[in-house]
Length: 462
Image (tube, rainbow, N blue to C red):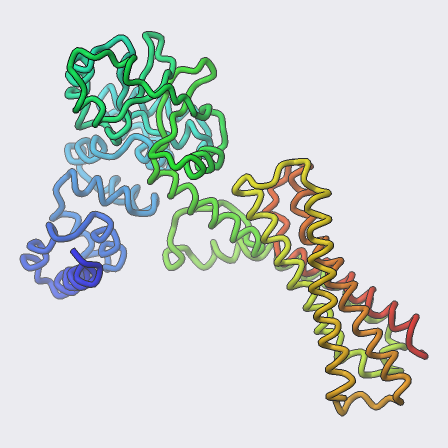
């Protein structure tokens, strides 16, 4: 179904449910993907949304829940009768199931946990051992594996029994009797090979994997680097415990990008998958207020600098006109440099020993950018001669030199600060993203004022 047609059907479903045309709505369900049904649910008021859920088959509802924020999925599950709750839980992939269980209050989590089949309980217990942001916490145990000493016929027979429970059959992992990862085979290799061929002969010997204790970002970087459909996850002894699939990697990447973006904007607190409109005003206030009040007090430093140089500013008023531009140039270039460095670190392009290389690169960038902007401003001062510059020609030349040098120094220094601070944060084991753009802006505002006003004192006759 084309995207436009899908959106039209989704809107028709929403309109039908809003209007109480339930039978018409029921007929549209088979035309929509679970992701589209989830979007329709989120767009509906409570009563029509409940009607939509009632129309869904258990397996479809399970698929829809995987597309919803965890808080919504939890609310839906807790409203189901026990018999349906057991069936729906059984249809949710185990990695997402664990996330949902962790969202539930303790007593309800225990109740839901005991509705699971014994095999699902074992899988959930295993995954609950690992931190949420580790490879072990994000893996699924619903993978396919065969032993290297099997024949193709034996391997296919063993896979038939788990086909419905496995998330990914395109990659089948090869292990020995102890469960150690030895490589993988493709489903088509099994399909087109002689039934008597041993798996050992088809094994590609690819044992690239991550440990359960590894950060989830490492798994994502490896999946992207090697263009893998899934990343095997091993325990400390090399036994295959689970896999992180490509779609899970995309979810992790989105979460990490959101977290970095929010932290760079000075938004703190726990990162959740709640949508913007579903997040309460008070929650948003709590996440934003701390940084804003801290930066407000830090901003007083700039005010103190200006107050200390009030005599110079009173003597040549034109200095005040160029002050915001010089300060803003530093904040913008510092924020750009920080963004580039944090991005490079997040995708694994910068190792711990890259500080000097980054500093040298950003120094050259800062000098070039600062020089170009400085020349542009000097030309502007001489050629356009704004009306507020009521100075004699020799002083105008000194004024232009002050502005140009201040821009060159400010942009160069701010670029270095913006690049080095995230690297310094990582060196002391802090998240580089917490060196937020507002914090860098506040720091370079003060340095920019000091550079500008000290140059004015040294060059101008004041």
